[in-house]
Length: 406
Ligand SMILES: NC(=O)c1ccc[n+]([C@@H]2O[C@H](COP(=O)([O-])OP(=O)(O)OC[C@H]3O[C@@H](n4cnc5c(N)ncnc54)[C@H](OP(=O)(O)O)[C@@H]3O)[C@@H](O)[C@H]2O)c1
Image 1 (cartoon, helix red, strand yellow):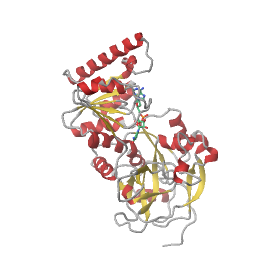
Image 2: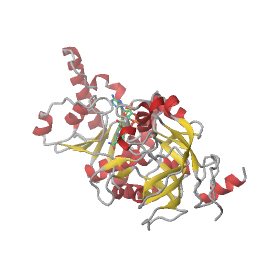
Image 3: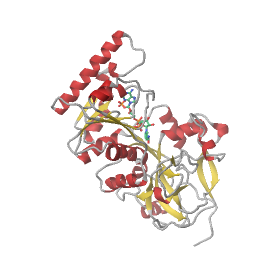
Image 4: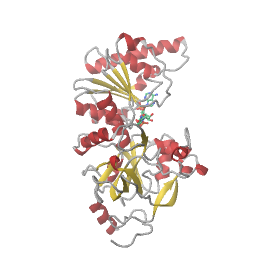
C-alpha cells in the first residue's frame, strides 16, 4: 500500500484501507453555538485513531436528525461537556465502507459495505448504559470518516443507494423496538399511529403490515394521508378534522366540551375504519402532552400505549381511571440495542421495509439541511451525500467507477 495520504478532496476516496492523516468535517465548537447555519462549520480535522473494538468507516452518506441541531445550539445540554472534547462532529446515521479496524475486531473487514446504528455502549460487552453515537459521542457522521464500536456496524442492504441506506437507522430502529420488542404487537391487532407520516411513523406503518397488524394512521395533511396509505396503512384519520382533540392545560368549560366531543368523534372514526366497535390494541405515542390523554382514553381494554418521546411536552396530564378500569398499560421505549437493530435491518435487506427519504442534500448543503429542519421546513427522513460523488450509487465498485469517470 502507498504512503499515508494527507487529506482527500470531498467526493473522492483514498485507496481502500489507506487512512489519511486529516479529513473534511463539519465541526461544532462552543464559541459558535447557535442555529445550524452558524454552528455547523467546515474544518479539516485529524482522522480518528482506533482503540480496541473500534471500526473506522469511510462515510458515503449521512442521515439528518434533530440531535445535531441540539448539539449545535448547546441546548438543552452542552454535549461537549459530556464527552469532554472542545469540538463535536454530529451525525447519528450513516452508510459507508469499513476502512480500518482496531485491535480485537474480528467480525468486520476492510471493504465491508455497512450501515451504522447509533447505540454506543458506555461499557462494551454489557448492555447496561447506552449513549447516542454522534450526539453524546464526538465522532459522528458529518465527516469523511467516523469512528464506531464494532457492535454498531450492520450490513448495508445491497439494493439501496448510499443515501437511502443512510436515511432510516435512528427512526426505524426506534419504531421497530417500540412495536416489536416493547409492545410486542401480534398478528390481527390494531395499532393507532400518531404522526404516521413523520420520521418514526412511516416505519411504524410499514412494520404493522409486516407483522399482520392493522395500522390506523393519524396525519395532518392529504399528501401525508396518500403516503401512509401507499405504505400499507389500513385506514387514515386527518387530525385537522378534530381540532379540539389536542389536550391543553386550563381548558375553559367550552373548550373542555369541544375536547370531549372530538375525543368521542375520533373514537367513532376508528370504529368506522375497523368495522367494529373496538379501540386500538396498541397506541404508538411520541407526541406527548397534546395527545397522551386521548391515547389512554382510546386504547382498547388491556391495550398498550408505547411511548418514546414527547414532542409537545413531557408533563402528561390524563384521566388515570381509563387506565386502571380497563386495565391498560403504558410502556416506555428508548432507541434500540444491537440485537434489535440487527433484526430490524434484516427486514430492510429483505425489502419488506423500505426507506422513505424525502430530500437529499449535498456535502456543501449539510448546514442548510440542519437549518431547514430547525425551521420545521422538512418532513420525513432526510440525508446528505458525504463521500459518494453523486446520488444512486450502491457500492464501492460503482462509487470508484463514478469517481474515475469524473
Ligand atoms: N427515544 C428515542 O429513542 C427516540 C428516537 C427517535 C425519535 N424520538 C422522539 O420521537 C418524536 C418524533 O420523532 P420523529 O422523527 O417521528 O419526528 P417528526 O418526523 O417531526 O414527526 C413527528 C410527527 O408528529 C406529529 N405531530 C406533531 N405535533 C403533533 C400534535 N400536536 N398532535 C398530533 N401529532 C403531532 C406530526 O405529524 P402530523 O402533523 O402529520 O400529524 C409530525 O409529523 C420526537 O420527539 C423525537 O425526539 C425518540
